[in-house]
Image (cartoon, rainbow over all chains, first blue to last red; front, side):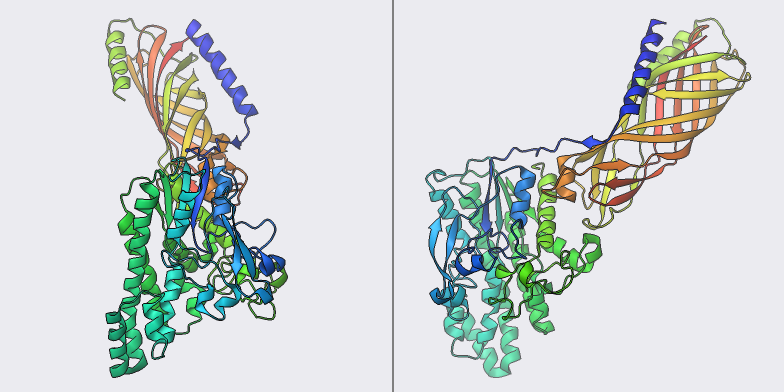
Length: 392
Length: 222
């Protein structure tokens, strides 16, 4: 009988507990207690490298619809990880001094976001760099490539040449290599073709000859067709190099937690749709897939490296916008008319120069960059992969 | 399960040596022991905004179970099961497969059964079948940091609410006498149950739980 008395008491207590019950917050701390976050990348990860001079004066600085509280995906993720907010490791601009786009380059040794708008994987000249000439030289983005971003991090005295193993490292690049390569098509048949292609696009003489031969025998369309596989191959090269950097300069240098985010679906951006050519859009698509598949294959099975498939997630956003709470996936939220936006870029876009109407759930801020909502979705996809990895 | 079977065998062996007693009209019996609830989950997709195909899964839970039975006639009884709350873990599934534990919910299914007990009141082994009205009460829901990361990264902790539901439960069971007062009860029940989960971030999800429960208790007849 004693057994039952105890048991009844327990049941009575249980009912009391139940009556008082209310929902609460579960354990919110990440599974891995990261000490910091280190970001290598391009404009999608940039938190204000160029927020200086006229860019800052115009209320811009990030590649989105800017505001005092706006966060790109790296900043959203930092909050979720419980690490300090990322700050740009370098600021400055090397553009037209008459327009306020020439600002001394300053390094911030305590900041760990090395991402820069226009950055490529290896080549130091990316979109917006002054060496590309007008109109790029007006803004003069620094476009320090991933290769150098990592080297710069390792050379910071406090970092001491290696990763601590307690930081989350993020790597996202490739799109600027795509833009630089794709621009080769604009030079086909011109005097600039050979020098541009063999210069910053890293083509060989043989590749230039192949395309020239096609142009000579079949005209412009034949030239574009001959260039397409070369462009895809160059993207595969960039991906291979990026994967090597991740393995030899990040993982081999002590990083235990690295997430590599692939390239979103550039072929569905307003930039690619605006080409108004199925043939050209298809080339962009081929280049994107070439980069992403090469990157994924090269990194698969690398210990300490997780892959976030932004491409698939992004493609699904285009196919099922309502599922993501997106109200528009084709029109930029920013008014890119030069009269309203001197750079025609989200870099200087804010509430002051967006289009009319509620753009809070648009996907795009400009022709390629997301709105704050788009960045939140990107952070969500990265977070999902970190959770699945047991890191978050 | 193996452990439970061993208990039954032991109880049955024990009972063979004992005297007879009855489960007859007017008797009141109480019991307590161990029970398990295993949901058989069919999850709907999480509503927008969410990653397409975000589904959930609900893990099994064990708890202390018991109950009170009143013999209305020699064969018809009314039964009120009692239990400590069952603590179920919520997991990501579908597009969220592999994301692990996303939260926790406690369940307290309250049921009143009408039962039919086969055989004579003095029977050594009496199988029974029952049908009951159930209120599946869910409470103390909590979301993990992983849920927040997936639904609203960088935002305030995402809260979960699971709607409590009325439904019915069908059960089959067996009592095995140990002696004049003591007996062992084994039951198995199924409950058709559909509910809705809501998140503080605005998403909802329809989930069919259809829990199956079983338990082994030791009972006492007054």
